[in-house]
Amino acid sequence: MILHLTSEQMLERWRVHRGLYPLAGPEMVSASLPDTLDAVLQAEIEAWYDGILATAPASKLAPAEIAGSITLEATEPSGGHIFSLPEGVVRLVSVRLDGWDCDARIIADPCSAEARMQRHRFTRATASAPVAVLHPGGVVSLYPYVKSRRALSVRVVGRTDSLYHFDDSLLPMPEEL
Image (cartoon, rainbow, N blue to C red; front, top):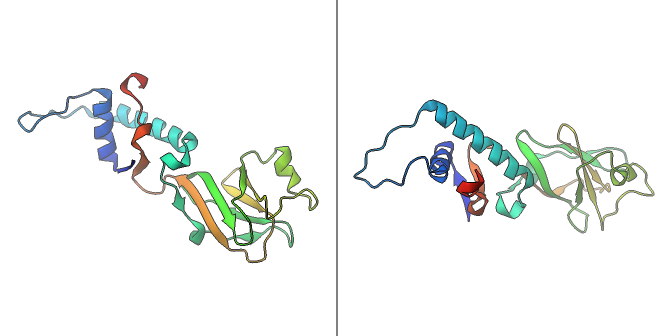
């Protein structure tokens, strides 16, 4: 089940997960934890969350659809398209343009042989096997060029609000912490 937790809710869950205080009934008095401990726990949460955003399966996260907020630019008349990922995006999950037969295969290394192949018209991707190349700074090149220049779908995982979005199965077990 996908959880959508605020910072306070996440910190509470992390404290319980770490065994820092028992689940109390209404008759128990709760004490506040020192701010320094909360800062340490928050740093743990941030490191853990950054890790799952970068590596967990997209089905265990809450990818956002951003196709309506991006602007595609042509890189050359028949070459491809380019756009920039918005602030807070950690990774591109999928992209599909109008005129492509399927989602693009995402290439994370712009210096790879397959990424370099997109620069030449005879080795460039086709509509039946499109390619998205990620560049430093959040720039994405899309191949092949399509005339409509309309993104049907661009799904990303990132930190776009103050909530934590993840499947509860991704929470580490207490012995893993």
